[in-house]
Amino acid sequence: MPLALTDLAPRYHSGQPAGIPSVCSAHPLVLRAALQHGRATGDTVLIEATCNQVNHLGGYTGMTPTDFAQVVHDLAGAEGCPSDLIILGGDHLGPNPWRHLPAEDAMAQAEQMVAAYVAAGFGKIHLDASMGCAGEPEALDDTTTAHRAARLARVAEETAQAQSLPPPHYIIGTEVPPPGGADHELTTVSPTDPNAARDTLAVHQQVFVDQGLESAFARVLGLVVQPGVEFGNKNTILYRPEAATGLTQVLGAYPQLIFEAHSTDYQGSTPLAQLVRDGFPILKVGPELTFVLREALYALDLIASDLLPDYGARPLFSAMEALMTRAPENWERHYHGSEAEQRVLRHYSLSDRIRYYWTTLEAQTAVQTLLDALRGQSVPLPLMWQHMPAAASFASAPLDPETLLIWRVRQSLHSYHAACAGAANL
Image 1 (cartoon, rainbow, N blue to C red):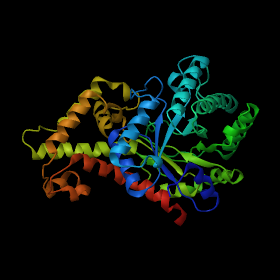
Image 2: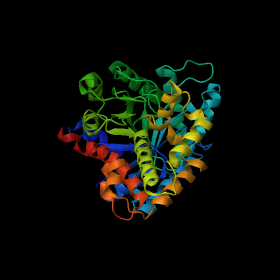
Image 3: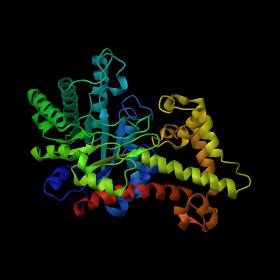
Image 4: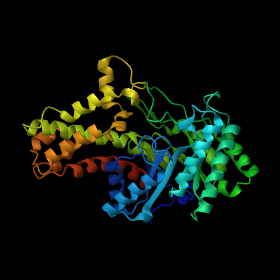
């Protein structure tokens, strides 16, 4: 049986922890990889969109929540993944995309966004109103944050009732790494202070009760905290269970709750399993999946350059370099150093900000040219060894490049699912 979100806390608190990977991506090949895994295994497929990526105004993907949900379900139908395995989530839903506006204007937009997510069938809602708006501090206190979260929860509750939909489950809390990873090389990351986690829970609970939202708070699944994991442009900080002991003990007083771990990308199977074991059974992953997808695309670009005389010299790489240098707004604040260092980061940073460019017509045209060039080609084994040795099984046979790309993403997803299933055995 697939795990439900409501199974996670009982499993953890009974000593039989199990987890669910949360796929935070809108790339069709990443989504297909997640859905193929669900079809093959019967595991829960949790797919989440962020407030900047998808919102009632379109977000940077150009998709509303209804659009995104339709894309996921259309792909699920094409991949044969049963719809009852799919859970849709909304991440960091709050005023963040409009924080340059006065608070009341930003919150009005956030209310419309939350209503759009719930009406589109998103059953997992992360309420995140922690950021200051125009004229406010960058980060708000717990009380102000909780009042704004309750305001958004009320909209979610009323929308679900009006649409005759099941009421959503909630995640609260906001102490997370910077979206997409840090901008600098990291040496250490401290877990959330246990008392800060307790205060966040207590204040939110009190405010929800005072606002008559007890039933909504009863559907709070967990709290976002910093377990001490992070990745920068060039390195990763792995989870250290001993550093988070005080934090994980907080859950002992809340048998209905678990923690949610953000930025678990690049952790690997053992740290991921330790996170699930220690009360972080929702593992958010995004940039790692598009990073390995880019890795595979660039490997195929090299293979095609070596194999096909008329293909050219790495035209996909060249197209992406031209695109990113012409439109630097998605990376220039995050990648620093000399021009040579920035060039490396544009393509190979762990934060993978190249992912913002794959939806452009120029990138899609270059990718399609690559896929068309290699489709049906037989790649000699030594050439595959040279550029993508892990994919040796695809050599010396007619190539379906999309299948190879999805296989590469599923390799990364496998470490998440293995960790989620094997945590109880640690």
